[in-house]
Length: 98
Image 1 (cartoon, helix red, strand yellow):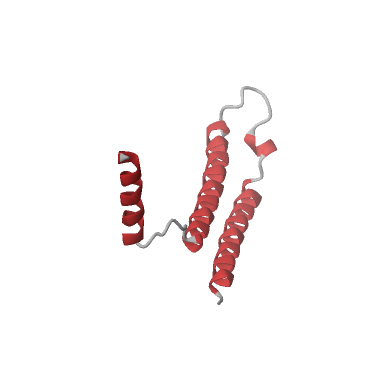
Image 2 (tube, rainbow, N blue to C red):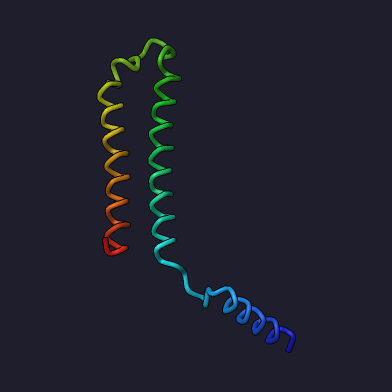
């Protein structure tokens, strides 16, 4: 009996907050977009950190200059992150009807 009373109070509480048990899809999309962008930044930050660590420590094997072309990688990373951000903003604007 106490369980049914608690459930009713929870329903009243959610209705009072205006949630009605529904998820705001626009907020969820924006959150997903930012998570996607942050994971891209973390991935590329890890690649750049790997380059910095390997810069002088290659123990006789191929060095980073033979493996990586930094000017090209920096430009490509900037283009990728900019295009991801622009595409995300376009999708959010499209969903908003703009």
